[in-house]
Length: 146
Length: 385
Image (cartoon, rainbow over all chains, first blue to last red; front, side, top):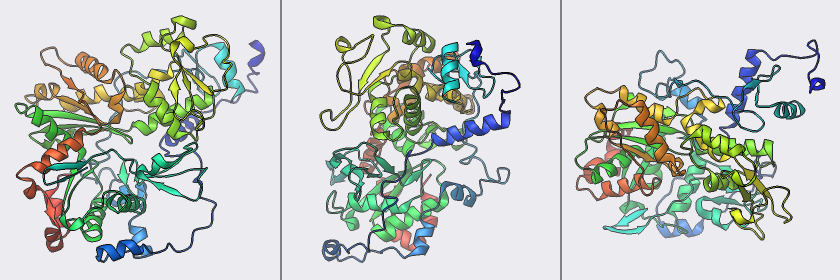
């Protein structure tokens, strides 16, 4: 175990900003619907879709088809754009209660820490990156998989 | 679901998204066509929603075209009313797009847009007519909302949103399994099933942690989950206790996940989002916080009527844990009652069904004629989103 600990001069300690960035990236990753890419991503776009003859003949109603780019632009905004449009990016100007003010505040209870390797409660912190571990064995695994 | 006259025609729970499969590359599966996919490994999800809000109308319209069309419900729009739920604090541009699409594109006869919690509250008050207040906990895919209702009106100032939902729990489970045992980051569908099959809410977190550390027979928390391979094993399952090989390896060719603390540490995030670094309060704390920000004379009424809805409440032990934590945080002279309905996922739908059968339903909806005459304004006035 003594051999695993590098010299103090070789150890690169991550500062708080970097650690916070890492945590933010992890939390953002938890918001993803998917991990990999769309299976159809690389494929060429299919040719113009054949009109559904059966539908239009049956109903006889004029169904409004897509009106081209304008329609698509309006109807496919991303979340950040919606927040901006609603005027919620500037918190003081926004009228409460709103989406942002409804967000739960921090807990009054102290944060608990778990070993990054095995998930059991942890008492120790990795000096370099701040990850938690519970035993020297888990520390070893952590350093191997850094 | 739908009623014709007063006879229920059908009601089913259908995924509101599209799927793409690595094995059936050219096809996009819509909604319940999920059942047609023979090999759902590496399944790719396409949701119309982002963070719980409807942003991608292309996808939503494809789902609705399919559901309302020939292959499914064959909706006759001219004669049909629709009740549709929206998230709390829904953005005005989304609400307007919704009006346009429902009235101008699909041309429904009448529309009621409402928060899901309002339907749940209505359902609850039907069973408990003497109660005036209730607090709805809606824990779903994208987030969890705590919403107090008083006489069918939501107390907007006391709504709390916790940014933890089923999606986050599944993603977290995928990560820890991928790090500790087997790379499953692409297997959202499979691991979601694992989560639903083996996870539970612990009543005594640290005690369960101790038990999960034990070796062999004494570890009653440990479970071996057999992953589906979609040829011989169509659906994953837990190995029965008698067949578990407690020390050493399995001789059979199956892929097996050994789950110990993951079983209860994952749902624990609903109670302590700070466990993974999200600085928000958990569900019981948020319930108490929300109620305590309401007028004091109303508070006892809310504590007596806590209703749990949404998919995440299905974890075994969820209701008891919420009760015991809220009980600890509440003054002893208040009664605390936490209700978990028989089907927390369809509870709000049941509320919608009751509303549609009400005599004053006609006054609650906006008809297409109303919309054509008054536009978005009438929707904004009538609907309390």
